[in-house]
Length: 402
Image 1 (cartoon, rainbow, N blue to C red):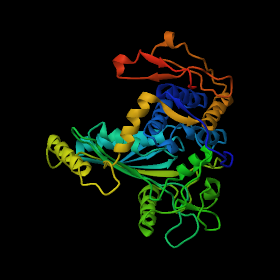
Image 2 (image 1 turned 30 degrees about the vertical axis):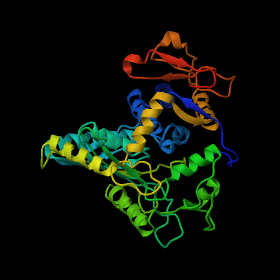
Image 3 (image 1 turned 120 degrees about the vertical axis):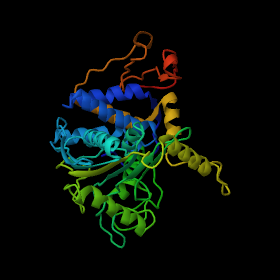
Image 4 (image 1 turned 90 degrees about the horizontal axis):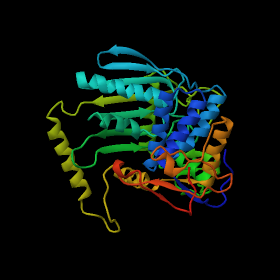
């Protein structure tokens, strides 16, 4: 657990390619196969790129601790049971949720391509990070999707005061033509619990409407908030949505439910998370071109709506994250010093071999040491432009990077 928040820390931009390589090596060093390590690292860095820092690479220390305590099996291989031609179940066998969910969505897409819809239930799984990466997986196959999961207790049911339901994300998506695709990924709480952990790591305060402390009082202290409960969005509506996630993900799959999912930061026992994944072929009732055209029209209608006072721009669901990704691909992903130190510690624990790069020699496949605990690294490498221009790098002397 990080220290109590004091003052905001200095931020450092990290190149996404270097970060993914670094995370992948840590995973491999902890008995994860290269193929599975690639899936997990890609999903984590995808969250970092989209600005969902709560579900990105900073999760690595907690995942590795669960591996060290035998609460998560990094070498587990998911198995599939075909229930009907359009329905299947994946048993994660206590492996990475990313791997089981990736396999589940891949299967759902395959069934939907033949039967129009594919539904997969995943059992005995673990935290799978940001739900939007599964929506994106479906979008890349021109599929609509629904992505549900349950999670550890953090939220009281409406009218209660104890942690019972998870702040389980609700996600769905639909492809578009020229406009932005529709990507919804939200928690039923006012804020995701991961944002509390992020504020704690970075020495920041939180808004007082996010959570209550253990005595039921509002707090801006993330440490106190983690001892209390999250607050649901929309009162009873948010509470009901968290129950819905438990029904579809926990009850239906045969995984833990009703407050019995283990916290991903608790390495004492398996999490037993459940997921619910659906892929839908969007051209069931019209051509794919017509569907995408209608999505483009919807996108334009939404962003061109008359704005309320004080609003400069209206965004489509998921659009802010896509804009953030474009920015971070060019400029790097911001990390606090404590967060980088935490990742360095994992590298040290696994005795991972790290090298400082020669950017002139290594070209695009640059591997720069992630370290702020040693003498400062005076190079910052940023990949800019498209693939054809990536050999041109800008070296800045005022930052430190992977």
